[in-house]
Image 1: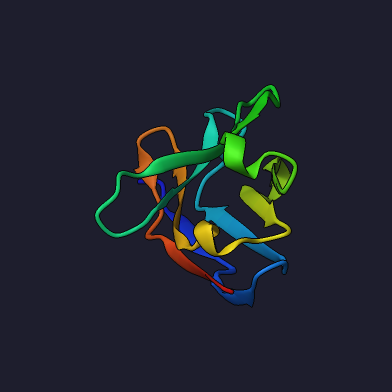
Image 2: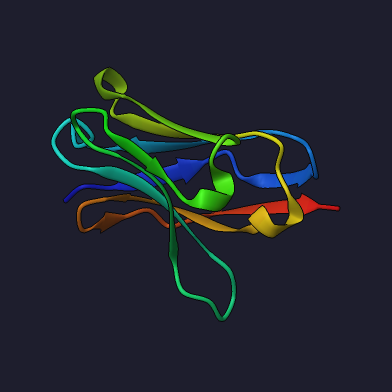
Length: 111
C-alpha cells in the first residue's frame, strides 16, 4: 500500500511563495506520473501540475510561470514550488500518483 503525505501548506500573503512536498512510502514517482491537484469547497478537483517518469511536465494555464513541479526520485518525494501566489490559489492541494492520493494540505493566500 503506497502512502502519500503532503506537507508545506499554510497561510501566506498574496505575492508570497510556498513549497509543498509529497513524500511517498515507496519508489513511485519514477514509475508513475506524479501530479498536484487542488480543490475548493463545492468545486471539482483540478489538475494543477503533472510530471511523467520521463520528466514531461504540464501545468494548469493559470499557474504557468508561477508554479514549478519537480521530484527527487532518490528520496521518493515530489514538490510544488508556488511563487507569486494569488488569493485564487487558495485551496486544498492533493498529491497524486496513479490511483494513490495524499490526504491534502490547505493553502490559504490572503489578499
